[in-house]
Image (cartoon, rainbow, N blue to C red):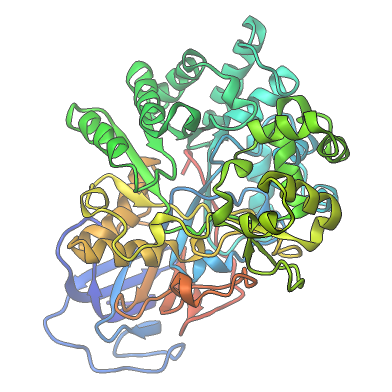
Amino acid sequence: MQGFDILITNARVIDGTGNDAFMGKVGIKGDRIVHVSRESAPVPFGPREGEASSFHAAKTVIDARGKVVCPGFVDPHAHLELLILHQPRTEAYVAQGITTAINGNCGHSVTPYGTERVLEYQYRNGLITQRFRSTPVPFRWNSFAEYIEGLEASGGTTISHGFLLGHGTLRWAVMGGAINRPPNEDERKELERLVREGLEDGALGMSTGLAYIPSKFAATDEIVELAKVLAEYDATYASHIRYDLGIEAATAEAIEIGRRSGARVQVSHLHMGAPGAYELIAKAVEEGQDVAADTIPRSTGHLVRGDRLVQFVMTMSPEYFDVGVEGVLQAMRTRKGRELFREQEPFFKHDPEKVYIVNTGDPALEGKTVAEVAATHSLEPSDLIFDLLLAKGKAVTFWFGKDRQDAAPDFPPDEVIRQPWLSPGTDILMVEDWDPTGWYELMRPGCMVTFMKQARRAGVRLEEIIRRMTSFPAKQFRIGDRGVLEPGKAADVIVFDPDTLSYPSLDAMDYSDPYKRASGMDYVIVNGTVVMAHGKQLDARPGRPVTRRG
């Protein structure tokens, strides 16, 4: 009990393994956990936080007073790889108790070939704005290794970050754009070389976005060959699946890629309203295959401002992928262009009675559905959207999917959320601090809170829920030193009361506020440094890149 930097006492310890909770202490020195023990009776309250204590022999004592103390949550599905260059605090993650995020999902990543190529790809996929693309970054890189080195030297991040290689970024760079054909032999070899190089330099695996250009042009066989390289390195294949096949067939393809390649599979943001897809994974797991999934436990659909929606139209239409925003706007003025966009852009396939017009300040439009307004003007709903985009641009926002089934109180099905290989993943959209209303979603900043509540309602033990939010995703991405409270592990620790951890319900949300955060997290410790105390985030930035090198 000597020489701790931080000692947490009177804790209801849930160690992340799924084992039963116990009353105990957790001691931290430097960036490591050095002590975990049981205590038979509460320790008398010691000094105030920050005061020295001869009784505890610790610089800082946190009296948890029976609250849960567990490993920091691991988010298996994040998109922070570029945002942390400008926004290292990641408040929405800290507020939920997330201490490690896995980035580079859905086929989008920081490689290859350097900063300009990556920023151009991300812009053409609608993930960043032109302003973000032209804002100077704190460092430049030409490889995955250089990105990691630059991030380590740039002043730090609040939480730690792991990274996947993005197949879409790789394919687009190697093949020279949105190319709808298989790679030739030279291109195939270069793709394999880049994957191998990234894994050697510490990438945790590779992701695909098979619903997006250019990954959607890749046949199953193309992905299998790259996944074989992942299998050599015991790395993870994570996939935003090919939804145009249907969710069950697309899940089956992901499982097939893992079976044929030998790679571990992570099915990304799998909707809990598709029990057939979950049955496919359960069967594969029962047969011995290493497959898991993450899910967004509740989502209200995207709120997309007009100028950002035009970007998305550009990214989903192969004919316009390399034309740019002005070309898309010009096409929207023609019948042929509108027909093409209606066919290819998923946003135009939403039920117009569930697409709302918001953030306009116009009483004739505000809060009404596209169907309502279109009927008053004798227009087709999609033509109304096109007309508003051309007339208003930034002065209109479309809310797609507001009345989704998963907002119902009895969602999700218990048999789905009880699956032991299912974890929550935030998939928080790439909201730029200087432009928070361009593209956002209301419920994802409360992902971890919502998942915990849903799973508890379904009768899942709290210890098992926390296992699926800590050691399980850490194991899935082979992050060996996180996810468990055990001497020698990284000191990522959180303190909270699961009964008071909260996030507003949809009915309580203000759709014009993209900054809503979870509440009830008391302490968040990252690599042995307190980054949240008494529910308030501090300025510390102890986060670091988490790589295959450790």
